[in-house]
Image 1 (cartoon, rainbow, N blue to C red):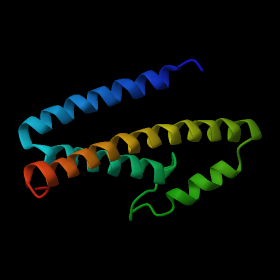
Image 2 (image 1 turned 30 degrees about the horizontal axis):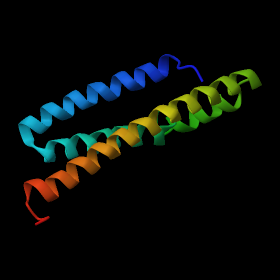
Image 3 (image 1 turned 180 degrees about the vertical axis):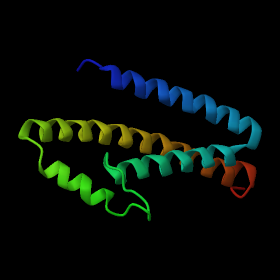
Image 4 (image 1 turned 120 degrees about the horizontal axis):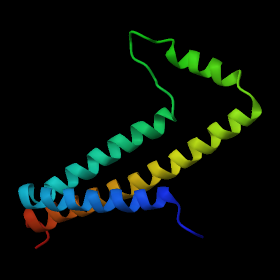
Length: 120
């Protein structure tokens, strides 16, 4: 299966995150890597839960209902395009969650065993 532009973006984003993790490791140790993993997981989870829609805030509580109403009035081809876009976004958030989980796991275990010396 040939790679598309999104796969190249995923690879570039993961390499960039590794560079940031290396900088955080040098500055804060494994704790910094774990914090980066938690941040990536937080952002990816929020994007995944929103599903491409704005959830609004307490001042604009009807925004979600307006978006659902406008989605109901779309044509079949527009719904198919929206579903394809959401599937692609889901693939990206799944990838980001895997990268964030890996950073959290490596940072947490490294902090626990190597920096706190609890593995001895």
